Length: 270
Picture 1 (cartoon, rainbow, N blue to C red):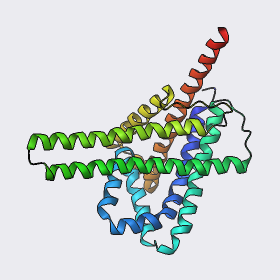
Picture 2: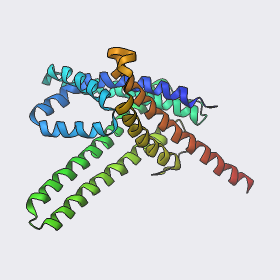
Picture 3: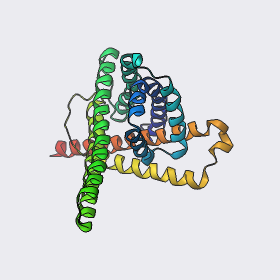
Picture 4: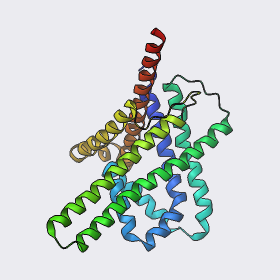
């Protein structure tokens, strides 16, 4: 409460929403061209998005994506990639500011340096997320291959389950890496110590997954946003999910901050 985590989470939610649709608009020139030649690949990626994003909000995202994809041309690819990275870095810049507040750090980087770091972090996180999606796609591909190539039923089933389980383990490890990279690079810390998995990262990831699932369950039974907000209901749902995402990210940072402060206190007492 003292660090205004709920207020900063609302700030993050706004900037995430602000960065989402310009990113889709600009990146659709690349994704749209790929989707037209690989519809199965495109549909599979949407299935993975549907695991965490509320269904009602996902419909709005897909509608916007399809509208922008219809106008995608090869001439937009270079500009689209640059603009997508720039617009996505707005959300990373917001993470920098809010994590500084959580860790009680005064920003010493200039605007240009902080923004360059935000762009670099955006590119790195994009690569990690892409690897996570690729691991799940490859797991499904090899599992289906095993189901068609292995004649024995028991061995075929075991191989398919093992391959899919391995792909989800790799994706989970990359999700943990995403949180670790954000906690390591986003705040303006002078002394950095790398931790693959921190207590805050564990709580943040578990809380994000549980909260996303809980929101989906709540919306399944009590989806009255369209009654209250009309056509803006799906946008409000998406903004709520972004708020939850920012809140879990900051909650993990709070736990890390207090854990590190306690460790320093024990060292000073000794």
